[in-house]
Length: 156
Image (cartoon, rainbow, N blue to C red; front, side, top):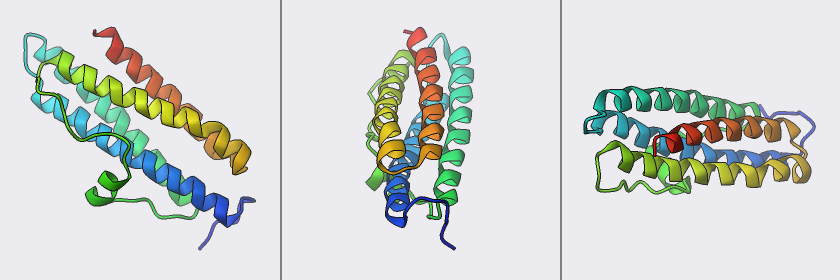
């Protein structure tokens, strides 16, 4: 059943399409953070293992909220590896280093890319598509990513 929430079907489709790209980015970032948690090496292994776990747990919640927002708008969320890889703005390639600084640099770059994507869409969702709810929603996500990026940056 289509959502009848005062936003045209075309605008709902446009917002859902952008949110699908965001979901793909979030999924890839989650996977890369899990990789860091599993494979980090070095004298700071234990503390970084725990740190990365906290970050991937936050990203798990973010992914779920993005997928649910897509559903609230009356569209289906992408949910396959193939769809995520075709939609993401991020790269799956990780650096050669398995120490914490190598992972942190890679993840920080990805968070910053997600922040930029979110920032570019806030006004577009609100002003161009008339979806102030999703504009507010992604503003909150942007703030979460900014905090996660700050935590990563603080380790460098």
